[in-house]
Length: 314
Ligand SMILES: Nc1nc2c(ncn2[C@@H]2O[C@H](COP(=O)(O)OP(=O)(O)O)[C@@H](O)[C@H]2O)c(=O)[nH]1
Ligand SMILES: [Mg+2]
Image 1 (cartoon, rainbow, N blue to C red):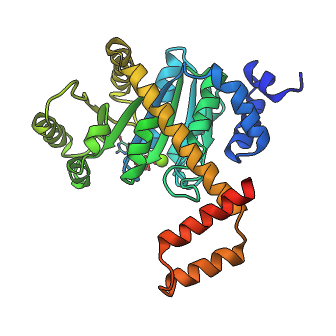
Image 2 (image 1 turned 180 degrees about the vertical axis):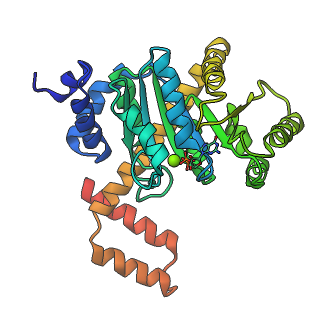
Image 3 (image 1 turned 90 degrees about the vertical axis):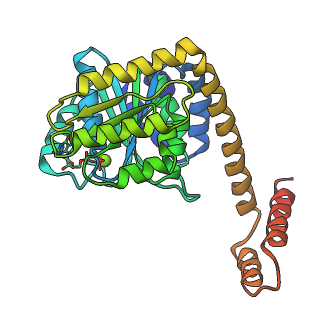
């Protein structure tokens, strides 16, 4: 059996790695792989873990994976965070625990570069999620460092979004006021071993009470990722959220919304690629110079680029 997709579907982790690389690189082979795998996806519970740098997202994801392993589940992890302990820069304690997970056949960790050329999440994140899903992981975690827009994007990609906060920083309440709370399905106060955790829980509860009360309020859970305290309850809350989505029909709506977003954003990427392919660096530099010199407006310049891309594609 040499076909990579066949091997992936038979549970070969090395085939999974290689397919992920092709898909991430956006090669023709990667697109072919994805076309075959996509119908097999859609079963995993995709869980976004987002929050500020250092809030404990990686530790928590590791602890969640450990708890799910104890429950007999297999777990895929996508770390969209260059500073993740899953890759480098790990402090020793984290690295040892992550290593345990990495050596576990039931856990597969994939790190991705933080940002694509167009900004936002790495462009192939949805594709990577779909491949992990098709491989058959019942849970796929996506760790992203929160930077406003990324959180919103991850909320589209994941069925359940877990927002990680810490006591005593004050940033979190600011971020929550800025509307990020709207994308959280489960709120976590991690580092609950530190002073101020109870205060933060109260503040979050008050904030939720203020928010226009339609639908379900996200539960607020306290965790200590480094010891695993509160982690079983967090797994329960994540499961409960999926059950809620299924019960209310929100799951189908969310899948359609995400499909629409993916189709449109992929179309945007394809168009931009065609435009770039149809335009020489010299022609682009000339347009840019004219816009910078104010002899041409950006709209007219862009129209010319699009025209050039279309002429080339046709
Ligand atoms: N005291 C305490 N430290 C924690 C907890 N969770 C994570 N940390 C530490 O916080 C630091 C950042 O954790 P990390 O998981 O890398 O955060 P990330 O940047 O959000 O992925 C590490 O030193 C962790 O050991 C916790 O619950 N309590
Ligand atoms: Mg991290």
